[in-house]
Amino acid sequence: MNHDAYDDRYILDILNSVKTIALTGASPNPARPSNGVMGYLLSRGYQVIPVNPGQAGKQIQGQTVCAHLADVPVAVDMIDVFRASEYLGSVVEEALRMNPRPKVIWAQLGVRDDAAAAKAEAAGIRVVMDRCPAIEIPRLAA
Image (cartoon, rainbow, N blue to C red; front, side, top):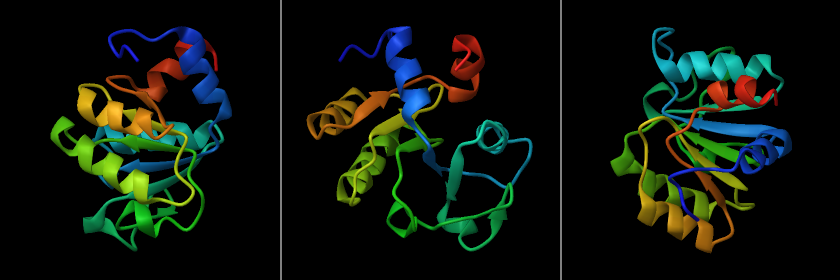
């Protein structure tokens, strides 16, 4: 897939089909984008599980933090990645070990790794990079 531009229907289909999101790189700091986006997604009715090894067992936005994706106790539809581009490959590797696998890996603004995306897509996982669901939801009226 060409990740330079996405058809609005592709994004809208993802946003309307996803219910449970694992948010990697979740921060308890309200000034951090991951914290604000997590709060926004929760307010829109998504179930969001924060993932951050340094915060494991604590609460962010009222949700218990898991150390790793493998620790998330429910099936995940989407992984929202708030980590630098160089870590996207390791997130994809973790996602491929999940059972069931997520349907979507969504890399936040500024996060892109085409090789990692190709690996996820080869395994049947849809990928969005360099986008934010908290921007796309109101833009598309999802």
